[in-house]
Amino acid sequence: MLMRRLWLTFSQAVTVAVAVVFVLATFKPDWLPGGQAPGLSPGLPTTEATRPVPPSSVTPDVLPTTTAIAASQGATSLAQAARRAAPSVVSVVTTGTAQSQAEASGPQGTEPWFRRFFGEGNGNPPVPSTGMGSAVIVSADGYLLTNNHVIEGAERIEVVLNDGRRLLARTVGADPESDLAVLKVDAQGLPMVTFGQSDALQVGDLVLAIGNPFNVGQTVTSGIVSALGRSGLGLNTFESFIQTDAAINPGNSGGALVDAEGRLLGINTAIYSRSGGSMGIGFAIPVVTARQVMDGLIRNGVVTRGWIGVQPRDLTPELAQSIQIAEDTRGVLIVGVLDDGPASVAGVRPGDVVQQVAGHAVNSTAQLLNEVAALPPQSRANLRLLRAGRAIDVQVKVAQRPRQRPQAEQK
Image (cartoon, rainbow, N blue to C red; front, side):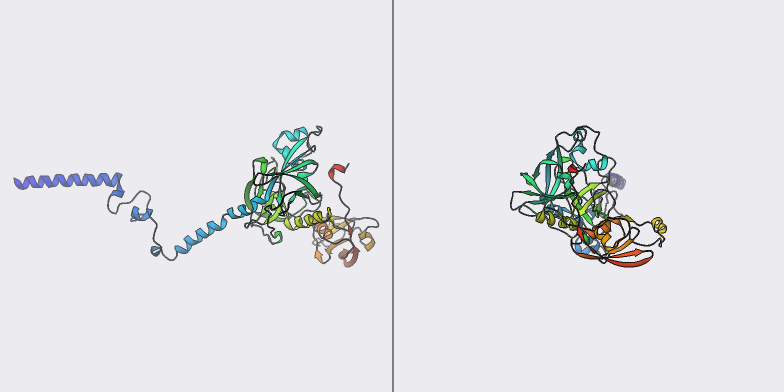
C-alpha cells in the first residue's frame, strides 16, 4: 500500500514536470538550458548570439571581411568632404528686371537658366524680380565664382554666407561664352575652396553638388561622374561639361561640384529636365576652364582667346563621302572662311578638314573651338589640314577673338 502511494506521487510529479517543460519549451524556450530563440541557427544559444563575439573565436576568413566592411563604410561617407567644402559655397540673391511676371510667379522664376531651357515666357512685359543662385568663394579676400546667367541683368547682387552674413557684391567681370562670372565682396578671412584637378576625373568618381536649390537653404547632394567632355548642348560657345547624376535644381547654378576630399571640380551650371526638377542629368563647367576664365576676368576684366576666322562643322560619314574622302576620316570640316581673316590669309579654304591644331588632334567642332581659343593672340600655330585627300600644314597667325556682346545689348 505504501509502495503504491509512493509510485502515485512520483507519477504525478513527473507528469507536472513534463507539463512545465512543455509549456516553457513552447512559450519561453530561452529559459531552458540550451534553448534557442526563433530565427536563430540550431544549436546556437541566444546568449552567445546576442553578445559580441571575442576576436579570438572568429575564424581567420571572417575577420578580414568584417574589417573590410567597416573600412568601406568609412570610405564611402562624404561627411568630411561636405564639411570642408560647404562653408565656401554661398547663396546669391539678385534683383533686376530680366524676368516676366509669368516667370517670376513660379518656382522656375527664381532660376534664370529656366529661360534658356524652356523659352522666354509668354510675352508679358518685364517686371522687377528676384533671382536665386549660388557662388563659390575662391579667395579669402572676397572673390567669388558663379555663372554669368545667375547675375546677368541684375541691378543688385547680395550674397548670403554660410554663417548667415549678408554682403553686397559687385561684378568684377563676366564671360557669356563660358557662362562664368566673378564677384567681389568687401570681406577678409573668408573660407575659400580648395581647387581640385578636373583633368584627373574618371567616369564613376564620387562627387557632391552643393548649393541652395529652391531657396530651401544650403543643400548637399551626391552622385557620380556620369560623363566627361559633354558638348553640343547649345548652352555656351565653349562647352566641355562634366555630367553628373548628383541632383542639381533651380538655385544650384553657380554652386560647387566637389570630389570626395571636398576639392572643387566644377561650377554647376544646368540640367536636362522636362519638368524643371532634377532628372539625374546635370552639367558642371570643369574647374580647369573656370580657373582660366577667372584669372582673365580678375586680371583684365575680360577673357582673351585665340581666333582664326573659320566656320567649322562636325565631319560625318555622309559629309566625308560628299567631299570624296574616306568615311572614317577624323577631323573637322571647314565650311566657311572669313575674308582677310587669319585662316584665309594662311591659305585655309572651305572644304578643308582640320585634323590638328598646334599638334593636338581635333575630332569635333567643340574641340576645334577650344584648341583655337587656348592659343595666345599674335602667336603662330600650325594647322594640319586634309585637302583633296592630301595632308598639308599651314601656319596661321592667331588673332584675338572678338568679344561677345551681352545679351541685353544684342538686338
